[in-house]
Amino acid sequence: MNIPFLDLKRQYNLIKDEINDAVMDVLDSQKFILGEKVEEFEKNVARYCGAKNAIGVASGTDALLLSLKAHNISGKVLTSPFTFFATAGAIYNAGAIPQFIDIDPKTYNMSPDGLENVIKKYENVSAIIPVHLFGQSTDMDPIIEIAEEHDLTIIEDAAQSLGAEYKEKKIGSINTSCFSFFPSKNLGCLGDGGMITTNDDELAEKIRTLRVHGSKPKYYHHMIGYNSRLDAIQASVLNVKLKYLDKWTDARIKNAMNYNKYLKDLINLELPEMHVRGKHVYNQYTIKVKSDLRNNMKEFLGENGINTSIYYPLPLHLQPCFSFLRYTKGDFKNSETACNEVLSLPIFPELKKEEIKYVTDTIKNFVFN
Ligand SMILES: *Cc1c(COP(=O)(O)O)cnc(C)c1O
Image 1 (cartoon, rainbow, N blue to C red):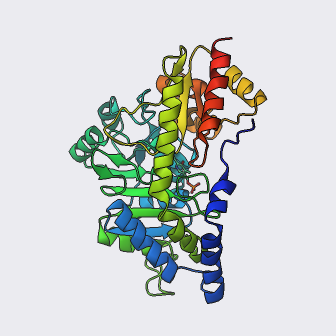
Image 2 (cartoon, rainbow, N blue to C red):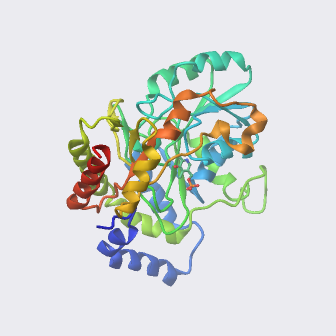
């Protein structure tokens, strides 16, 4: 059996006519930049997340960059070293310096332990960017408490977590939050796209201005902004796909529960159980393979037609481009161990139960041979 890591064609084939019509609508209108479709999608996402405002931008990376700029962030910004590069790249490109806080090894998300010490160590910390990795919320309450105490801004990297919940609240409904519609996210478009949600009307207006070169009205610039807009074609397609998001999320959760059922009690494997009260939307189903077996297992699965991924092989504090931050190996042990042990299995909503069974049988063959 051949099992792709992610097969977007299966999803497209289920709603092909609707998607094609949505694209044709925009072609017929010949209105490509912002406009009605984008406004409609912004309203839909704001309602979906329970936020007052949603602002469409060109990517998840730009959502982070424009959020940092709109909040006037400078100095140091704390984030996780176990995330996609964009989180820290955006901090640097916004003119601030990323500093890292290790993860909780169970959730892969920023641990509040040590946060206070780092804030005291560097005097100019101005913001914290928790990342809701793989579809599960960071444990926000202790982080919010520390941020309030030290008057720090929180910007959430929710690129992998649209639809996820922390306690009873949707991600995106509390702090400024950044989403991505990169094709591999839970809600993916036909290329790049991103969104910022916020309850602060003034901040929302500032981001709307920043995404059009800081001009308001047109050709009058009070700020130096960017060209960073969500395309009308993307918004039109996303309006169609958003209607299916909860159904797809349910399918991801069901797949995860099947993996859990078939893989439980295997030695040397750790499964992605929920460790925070809320809703995990499984952008990834990531297991931990102990005792240096990860790379061998990945190879064995590959030989048996099963495609897997390693998110992420190298933590950000050890990336060559951040050597100027002077971190060394051993600084964030939980993140470093995660990089050596994680393996993400196929989890996309259209994956069939037989396919999950085949993946788990193959893993059992590996573990017990
Ligand atoms: C995908 C992703 C981003 C960046 O989103 P793009 O739309 O690809 O720019 C940022 N942070 C995390 C955690 C991501 O997974």
